[in-house]
Length: 71
Picture 1 (spheres, rainbow, N blue to C red):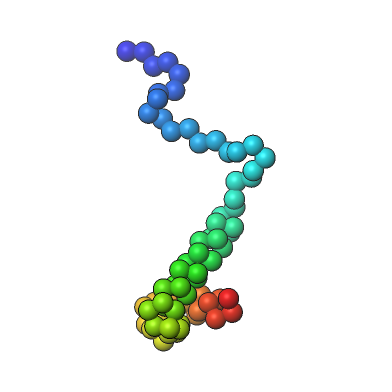
Picture 2 (tube, rainbow, N blue to C red):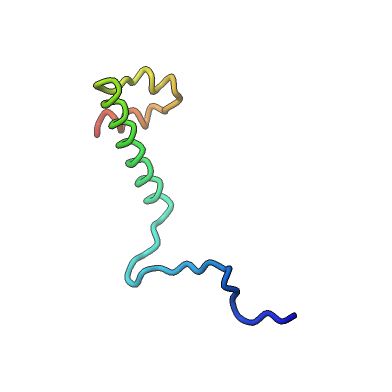
């Protein structure tokens, strides 16, 4: 049996020319912002506003709630 080159089953990941890979902090910040937006939209649609007590009960942290209040 002979293995030549790269198998077609192997995924190849390439960066677009001129773009840098995002750092972990940037990815976390982007994900947090998306979660903030989603939570805000969902609660506004369901309850007409943001219920911080319910979010605390659901396990969201104080830092997250502070960012939600200021956004």
